[in-house]
Image (cartoon, rainbow, N blue to C red; front, side):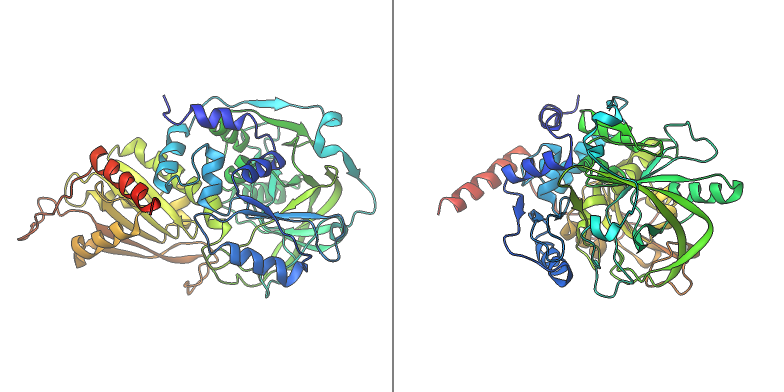
Length: 487
């Protein structure tokens, strides 16, 4: 039984929407309303960057006085700190990253999905319906996320699409986060790559000439925002994973163009892929902290918009880390890699892929023999996420906490030999790696910082100090904190 289960389940039943979560965050001191009138640029960007300096405890920030957008509301930083994620998972705000990782792992793969159905005419998301004279610039308080972006961007949408070759397969209905750049009142480009589920749907539509309809959900259930960015299987449902992880229902309804959408989403933009057309997209300040350049991207035509009364537009700051992008997807990037490795290597203890969407990952493992950790690393590089993202991979022993960089640096300092470093050149890599000479191609670096095992020579003077640990030490540490707080 999940030792964390009682609290999160009780908590999750009260969170059915973004609005519910903002109220919950507010009750924990983790949501503030900005008191002053702001300009969309540069004020919102600068406030987001300032909040992001407090990675452990930054609050969500609601803006309801946006110049040029009367009666429009915007929220950022909903997943912008570990404290906010702890509240979502039902933990104290001070919960450690390691604690939350193991909690997610214990919930991972649950088959207890709870998906409710709400009739479209009863769904809050359809309270207001716009089918003519659609103008995204009027509906949304849009702005450039970074100052040299090539246009306004929607950075935290959950985009729903169906496989054109298997449209009735619920599992193959994808919910993903893809950046969207409006190019007119009712047109936008959407950036995806063929390896992404959305990319596969676009390729299928192009090859067959079949229509591809999508629903762009804005202001979503906080668990859905996390799972839309999680690398799960192609035929696995993000809706099912999110509800199972929360231990509570997520209500779905039908969009006007026939897709399953969240009944309590704030805004849904319905659109259809324009066959044979590409428009220039970018530059865009991406998660590695660099601008991704200008590329041609698929075009979508907006056909309708639904939204709740007085809707909240949710956006995100992305750029040079640490940003909300990192806290939003970090743990949910680590979990599937761990789950895939654990099936074949029970010795895997934990996976830290928090850094820049796993461009650098750290895996702790119970070493079995010389070269074992390198073999696990090579398997990690063949996972769906590792194939394109795990650029630098550090392997550490089970006694090293991969979420504690002090311990990782110790392992690198005392356990790494020159022969423990592998470089795999000319491998597949994400297009936006700023270090790549050829976009889409790069290296994988493996550093084995685990204990030297036979038949390798061990060397002399290698007995490692083992500090006392366990409940007694934890109790003493807690007492020291109490004494410190009492001064």
